[in-house]
Image (cartoon, rainbow, N blue to C red; front, side, top):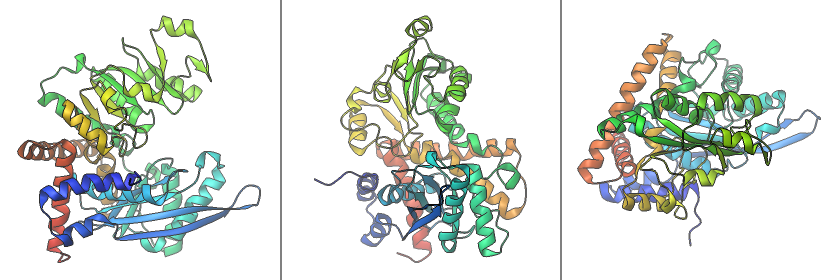
Length: 428
């Protein structure tokens, strides 16, 4: 039995789609493995003067359509297999939304929550120094990902410029506004997903006010999606973070939850301290505590996994009650779960479309850095909406034309664009 990893799960979906597209052996070969895998060990001195070392990676999957593009994550589970899968998904994603990038991803296997700010800066600068030869606006443009921030992007840009003796505002995206950042970048992933979901609901002639939403993950993407949906009239019935979640059949106010999370560090902080909860207050607010696993199986119309990958598998997919699943996280639904959802008529809006808003606005920031022309927030929002809806229309058309799932259709759209570019360049 083959061990299931993020990369083998990507390959499984890829295999299904390339068979349908009848690609040549040469075309399939170039889509099955990364073009480059750069590995290193990064060492810094911690605040106690002790040398500490962390494995680091930059995986460059495919650049047929433009410079490699992909985030850098700091996480204990950021191993080579995970980073390879994310780089592959980025190549598909940039092609689906038709922006001139390829796909890459980076990672440092560490727990940044244990770092001081000085240590965090040292690790960030060490990454830029280590991989400087493989990065650049015309080569590979990184961005934030799990546990990485605008400050980290600023340190990396600064270090890259020092090492290369260049002015390079377009070598990295997701920077602070004061250092070449882009208006609207912080909300881009959630806003892009919201545009796609709204279009899906509109085309299916449903009333948002009658739809209940559960969101697993209350980080940047999940929390902002909750706020967008609440403003638009959807009923958010459940949210969660790493410490668990809350559910109310009568709906919860994500603005209030966000306020309490900022104060207590958790979405359940208003009601619970550790395992001790204020049952009286919970009953008064018609709220009950749920685990992250339980949230996925709650009665709702729209389920939004916005945490980590492989949350919904063949083991729990049959218990999901939602009619729509919008993947704000990368790879939250396994291939086995996909098959179950297809049989049950549950529509999955896949990550390579649903969470592409972040890389689209990163493209705007890259363009801004290269041209020196500043974008307004209204321009950023309007162009994001246009690109996301054009991508959704193309994927929906492909799904209808071939009787495929939205994931298969999105992969087909992306792969066809990548293969077309490889042919033009004479690679195949």
